[in-house]
Image (cartoon, rainbow, N blue to C red; front, side, top):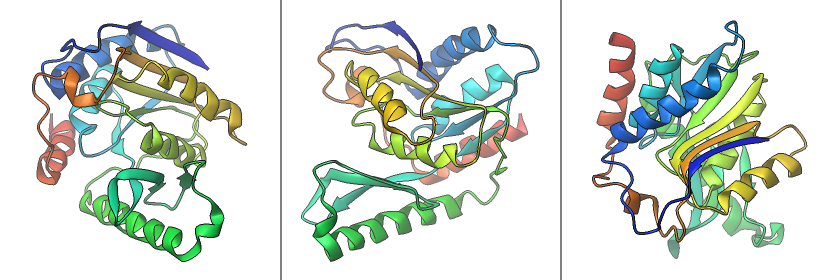
Length: 234
């Protein structure tokens, strides 16, 4: 796996104005990587909604390629909605934390069902999405930042079943340790995992994605839908 990490930075530093600013900066880094490849190389960009769409749109524009979404949700238990025990995509690809055992039975399966239903419901809102076939193309998965990496990892797993030429994981910011996690996803996968990671900054300490943005308001579903629609109008 090839990794492009542009800076480490301080855990207390604000790096990006907002998601659009982060997307424009990420787009330039991605374009620089893409320009080292043959002109015939095809790309498709997948955003992790909702927050990933304003970041992914400038990346897709810079590459002149289609923009789509891939929906993944954390799997949590009712008693602790902040703690992810796994992640699932709308199409049913699942990853569990290593600490979650298969003998937890019904509670684990119920948590999975709830999370997948949420993922499927969110994907259904994107009725106008192009549903691009990534076969033979380099598929980029973009989010506004990577914290635990669970949703990104399961998105990679899902996309790999669709036989892209390569998968690139792209984010403005992620923990320094996420670099090693990306390598482990690749090494442990029965299929190839991540081929390239483009992360603009890996601050230490990390704390949270929002710390590195001046403006990090929640992206509502309607805003995410409008972002995708506007991409294809312009």
